Amino acid sequence: MSSQAWINLAYLAASMLFIVAFKLMTGPRTAVKGNYLGAVGMAIAIVAACFEKPVLESVAERGAWPLVLVGVAAAIGAAVGAVMALKYPMTGMPQMVALLNGFGGAASTVVAGAELWNASATARAAETPLPPWTQFAIATALTGLIGAVTFWGSLVAFGKLEELPQFKKPWTDPNRHWINLGLAAATLLVGWGVCAYPSSNLLFGLLVIVGSGLGITLTLPIGGADMPVVICLLNSYSGLAAAAAGFVIDNSVLVIAGSLVGASGLILTAIMCKAMNRSLVGVLFGGLGTTAVVSGDDVYAGKIKSAGPEEIAMVLEGADRVVIVPGYGLAVAQAQHAVRELADALEKQGKTVEYAIHPVAGRMPGHMNVLLAEADIAYEKLREMDDINPTFPETDVAIVIGANDVVNPAARNDPTSPIAGMPILDVDKARTVVVVKRSLSPGFAGIPNPLFAADNTLMYFADGKKAILDLTTALQKS
Image (cartoon, rainbow, N blue to C red; front, side):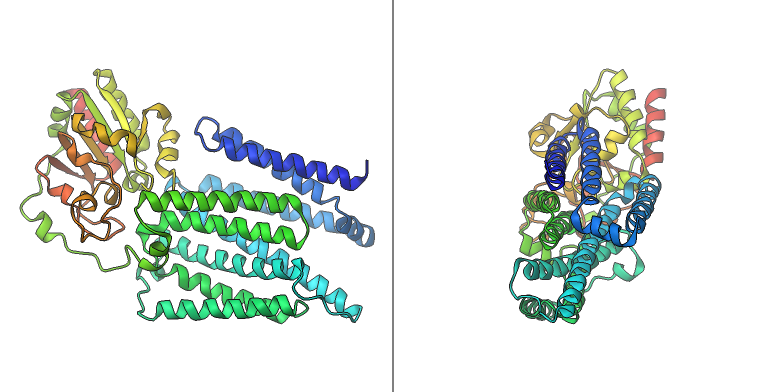
């Protein structure tokens, strides 16, 4: 069997591992194994790529130096990735995912640019221009465009999620749609130029620049409420860029892996849009959460009932069923372990404890699931929105920790609300609702929450972790 056949066999094995890894990562029990299999598949693909004919020719010409550079780059990347994974807090996972999406897009763009540079240099030496409208030319243009949009769009998303000062003020220029339309038209025109005149490195560079501008202007107006959808979409873009880069260098495993990421990202984007009752067009151009924060004085005035840990502990004593609703505030306070202690104390008293998970709670899909898994909370106790909503009328106490928009009854009751029609957790139907928050500040959508002023709601104003620890102490003393 030829060496190329062995390489193709290795690529096939890597592709199969990627597919199995994606399947395993759909469940919390098998997700870790899926990650390991995906890493093994990528290692096989990288090693196999080192035996491709162009690489071996480069080694024959320059010695082992190219492989040394590959090893050094891999070591640096592994070190940076390990530091990011270990040092970045769980609350920062959405930002890190956005950043990694961007790096994927940038890598694809660099690969396409380097391949175009080599091909055009070879063509100039032979005094023969590269043929137009070939697979190579079209794939190069697509990779440069999608990769640039992904990289800069992801950097903007990172800035918004990290709440950097430069990104706190939303870009609400009334002409922004015309600017985006102009940049989109420019990318199509320059992209056509790259396909028609692939020997021009200048046109490719211009395409990357215009695409970068488009990535920035498309992401700047999008508000925090829509960030879970944006992260999914950028993840899909990074996969599409990788797949296009695979066509540039004729690498089958890159095409397969990129297609898997691109398709899964699009599917997840559709799921997130459905969970928010938002269209993708509405997410990209609607700007939910970028408007000025609406005052809650009319909603809250004279209606807020505040309570301390001792009062809430007395309420919990008489409860049989308790549902905990985690939100981004829980992640910020790093209160997942404190919540586990509270649940253990309640269960020791014979009470049933479950967790209500909204699809877009937090800042990325699955954020709450990962956070609670970190505290070794059994996955069977996590209930999805459609499953648990019918049971809220039979719930004695619902404890909302740091969630806001996903429990806002205005989505169900106020057709004029910016979040009207968005599926929510029906915690307001529980017999008693305890809301743990630092203040009455609004969520990402920037609107007040009538739940806080409801007759059956008690507000517990405190840091999430301290509040739950004090409540657990009060419950154990009672």
